[in-house]
Length: 253
Image (cartoon, rainbow, N blue to C red):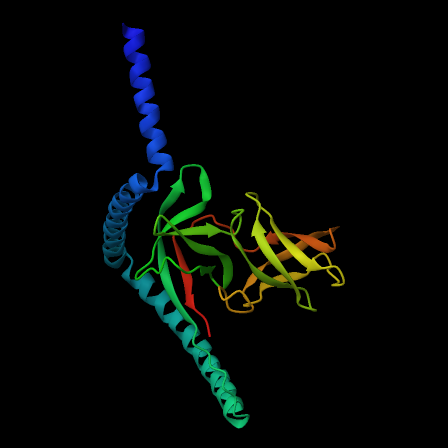
């Protein structure tokens, strides 16, 4: 009798777990509820840390902020000067080109699944699930944001489904970079006639409408040929050691 009851309970639990894992209708409200709880926890934790730091480390914080402000003001002036020069060039040549890149800070809620450090649930205000967004960290390409059950899911560079367009080396050889669920990245579909060398830098091309051009991705460590194309193994610059906050490229141009 005990064996029959145990077998019956095991089957019920297995069916329940399978339904939760594979059924999006059941999974979506559960994910929403859990993410709401995690977001509230992060908000409370951040508020406590901020209050503690403000109380005990005011002098150091103020000094650091002053130094950073001076540095940012200098960089801002340089950028303003550059923006003015570009604006004058556009006007002089009657160019219709416009730059309207929108970038915003987004916060990590949690890993999607325990043990997979390349997929993160993100807190994204006014999320449009029909688009793919570029994810950056300190001017480095970090991955992309896709929709999963209507929620914002970040696929970091190492994830096999994280893919975007890049340029390689001084000649800007085009390619598509993606992860390999490993520490290294792979760039595929590099034209066979392009000269690729070990140590060449890989940057975003901006041709995928996901990233702006010029964000650093990594460096080439080896090159192979296959089916009329070249493939390059890349050591990425971004290391996902503490994936708490990122900048998301909401739109470009």
